Length: 78
Image (tube, rainbow, N blue to C red; front, side, top):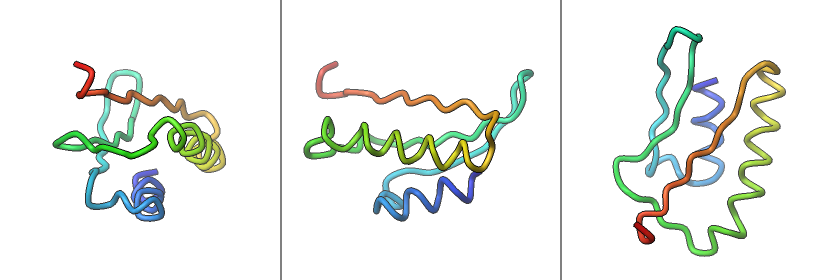
């Protein structure tokens, strides 16, 4: 899963903006992508839905029981 996420971020040209890591909780393993600083997208509202759909489909194909969640921050609105 981590390799797949790294590949997705390369495809989207975000590999220099985010890092992917894996951890474990009492519920099981998780894979997460984060950034140390805000990543700003022009036209984010046009881009995000299609990105979420593509990523969710790729995750489901690889690990059907995985749960995908997106937690976008909006630092310029905070």
